[in-house]
Length: 530
Image 1 (spheres, helix red, strand yellow):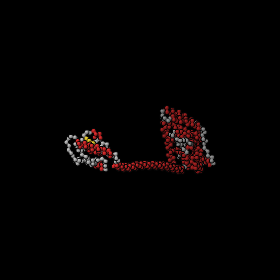
Image 2 (tube, rainbow, N blue to C red):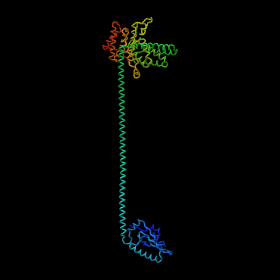
Image 3 (tube, rainbow, N blue to C red):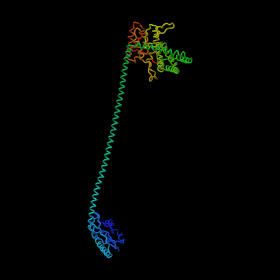
Image 4 (cartoon, rainbow, N blue to C red):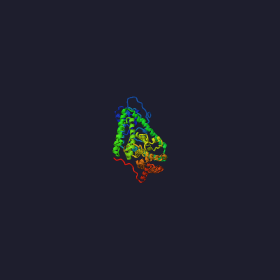
C-alpha cells in the first residue's frame, strides 16, 4: 500500500510554518521554494521559504523538534524510502539562507529530483511487502468479519427459529387450549343434557308416581265408597232420610210463600203474562208422543216460554214450579193409564233439569210431597199426619182415597221417576253437564225399601217395587251387575217371603216379575222412534 506523506504531515506541520500543501499552492507561492520532486508521488512535499533581505538568525536542527504521533511513527519505521528524506521522528527546521546558498540549494534539489525519478522506475519491494501484509491483515479482518457475520447470521437464524418455535408453541398451546375449551364446553353440554334428561325422567317418573298415587287413592276412595254404600245398603240411615224428607216438605212451604203468593199479589200485567204462559204450557204435556221429533218441538216451545221470563226472577221461578207440578200431575193421570208414556215425559223433564238447574229442586220437592217413596222414606200411616206425609189424598167429602187409587198414583209417579234415573243425558249436554238424577237414585229407592222395618211395610211398597222393576230393572242390572242381581233377588224373593202371610197383591206381582227375570224374560218400555 502506498502512503502520501503530505497526508501525514499536513495537519501538524501547518502549525510549524512548514511549507506543506498542494502542487498548485507551491508553484504559485513566490515566498517558498519546493525542495522535493513534484513528480515523485512517494516523497513528502516539502518547501522552504525563500531568502529575504531581512535579518535572520541561524538555528540548529535541534532547536525545534516536533514529535510525531505514535501511529505515524510505527508506519514510517517499516518504510525505507529510496530517496533521502528527513527522519521519521523529526521535522526539519527552516533555515534562512543567503542568495548564494539558495542557488546552491536549488541546484541540489534539481539533481535530487532527477535521482528520485530514476529510483521511482525501479521495483518497490518494500511497498509490495507492505501491500501483502496489508492484504493479509485485511483478509484476516475480512475473515473475522465473515466469521462474525456468519455468527451473527447464525444468531439471527437461531433467534428466528426460536421465535418461530415460540410462535409454534404458542399456536399449539392455543390450539390445545381451544381443544380443551371445546372439550370442556362439549362435556358441560353433554352433562347439562344428561342432567336435563335426568330431570325430565325424574319429572316424568314423579308425574307417573303421582298419577299412580292418585289412581290408587281414587281406587281406595271408590272402595271405601263402595264399602260405605254396602254398609248403607245393609243398614239404612233413616234419620238422614227423614231429614231430607222434611227439607223438601219445607221447600214446598217456601215455594208457596216466596213464589206462589207473591205472584198472586203482583201487578196485573205480570199476572196476565204468566196466565198466558200457563195456557200455552198446559196443552204441551198432552201432546207428547213416542217420537223424538214431537219431543224436540215441545222442548223448543217450552224453552222459548221459559226464556221470556228470565228477565224477572219471580216470574222465572213461578214458570218452573208450574212445569214441575204439571209433570208430576201428568204422571198421576197419563202414566197411570199408560206406563210407557213415561218415557217421553221423563225425557222432557230431564231436558228441562239440565238446561235450567233451578228446576231440579222444584221437581224433587213436588215428587217428595206426593210420593216420598222416590227417596225411600216411609212412616206410619196409622195417623192422619202419617197418611198425609205419605201422599194420601182426600176426596170431595173429606175421606181418604181408596188404597187402590193411592197405589196406582204412587206407582205411576215412581215409574216416571225411575225412567228419569235410567235415561242418558241429551246429546247436546253430554260433554258439559252431569246427570241431575243418575241411576244411583234407583239404588237408594230399592235398597231403602228393602231395609224398611217389616212393621211399616205395606202393599204400596211392593207396588212401588213392581213399578220401578218395569221402568228401570233392565238398565239397573247393566249398571250394577252382580250387586244389582243380589238386590233384585233380595226384594223379589226374601222381602216378599217375609210378608207372604199378608197376601199383598203387589208382592205377588213382584214375585212374578222375579220369575220372568230368572227365565230371561226381563222386559222394559219400548224406546222412542225418530
